[in-house]
Every structure is written in C-alpha cells, then in structure tokens.
Length: 287
Image 1 (cartoon, rainbow, N blue to C red):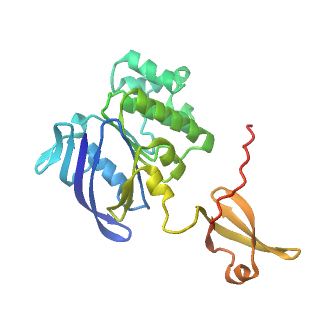
Image 2 (tube, rainbow, N blue to C red):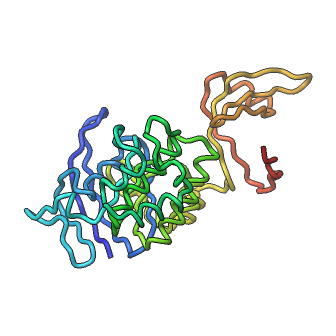
Image 3 (cartoon, helix red, strand yellow):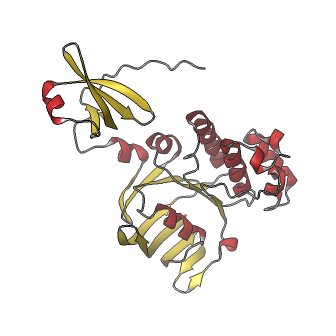
C-alpha cells in the first residue's frame, strides 16, 4: 500500500498555485494522472521520487519516505523513473546503460528480450530511434528492481504505431514484475488501456479520482462522444456549407447548417459531438 498526502507551493506562468494531493494506491495498481499543463503532474511525480521536497507524508508499505523532517533520499527509494527526454548516457551503449544501474547481466538480457531490442545491445543512443531510446530508458528503470515505476508522458514524442507497441511493452512489464505504476498522460485511449485508477488534476488539486471508465466516460451532458477541433476553412459545395476541420493530425469535412455557417468562422475552436451513438466503424487497412 502506498499513501501520499503532500503539499507544495508551485510558481508557474500564471502565478502561484498550491499543490495539495492525498490518495492511496494498492500494490500492483496502475495509476494514470492527467490534467492541463501547469497543474502539478510532473512535480507530484518528482516529489514521490524524492527529486523535490514537499510538506506532508509519503508512506510505502511500512517505510516512511517523507514525514515532518524525515526525508528519504531518491537513492534509497525503490523507484524507477522514466523521463520524457530518456536521459540515457550518450557514451555508453544500450547494455552498458543498463548495467551501470545494476550489474545483473541476466536481468538486462531478459528486459531487452522482453522489449524486443536485445539485438541493439551494442548500439549507442545516437544510433537509436525515439521509440528504441524509450524502451532502453524503461529497461534501465527496471534494472533497479523497483517497487514503483514512474512514467512522465513516456509516449508523447512517438508516432502512433510505436506508441501502441510501447503501451503493450509497459502493460507486459507492469504485470511481469508486479509493479505499482504511476504514469502521467494526456491520452484518454492510453489511460483507458493501461490504468486501473485515474486522477484528474487541475491547479494542484484532485478534481476526480476513480476508474478510467468512470472519469472518462461519464459526462454532464447527454453527448455520447465529442471531439475537439479547429475550423481551417468554410466552403460552399452546391447547396451545402462545408466546414474543413482539423482534429488532431487529421482534416475532415463536416456539413454545417445555415445557422451554424452564420455563427462560425475560420480559426474557431469547436466541439463535434453526437447524441445518437450510431457512428460508422470500419477496420483500418494494415500497411
């Protein structure tokens, strides 16, 4: 069992906010933390790791990591931390990066094989793709045999195919090593796929804490799903008005009514939603 009740004043671009978080995490649970930029997500992860100090209590099983004047150093916490920028040693090859943490050759081989990069063991970081570097970073974090794995947006810089592959790797490693995992993510699909519990942070406070399905699928409206986009053009096609909308990395055409055409303009950010849950679904062709 992990118990966290921490407080810290943060200074951001919009002024100071008070980070105040209290929650419990069971052994082997997977927690996802989401929220807007500046809400305190990364700071919370760094406090858990011991990379930043705060007021409050952090207790893992029967061990106190933080309480009053007691502060356990990062080296003494059973933590594996995967940063956004990989933080690999450029002068060491893949295997050396792992063995620097722990000289266990057998464990290193097992981790590299599980993540399908054993054949890259003699390559240096500058010879690897972003996805390969992230796999090395994850393996290196697990070389400490940690109780808790911390992931700070581990898939944010990766293409969709590599992101999906690494999600599978994380799910496998989490289960295989009996980890308690805490991951920061902005991706609803990623959170839903991987986590057992979700925290939604805003301005340093926990707005919601529940299962991903309860947080992500429950809405205050009758909409069954919605997508955010931006209008990049409005054209007239015969008797129809058509908005060209950018949604993520896709561009779609949406027929709009006369009234909508009067009220919308290029550059408007919009929400596309439906109340009747009957979307067309087709299988994506494999390349």
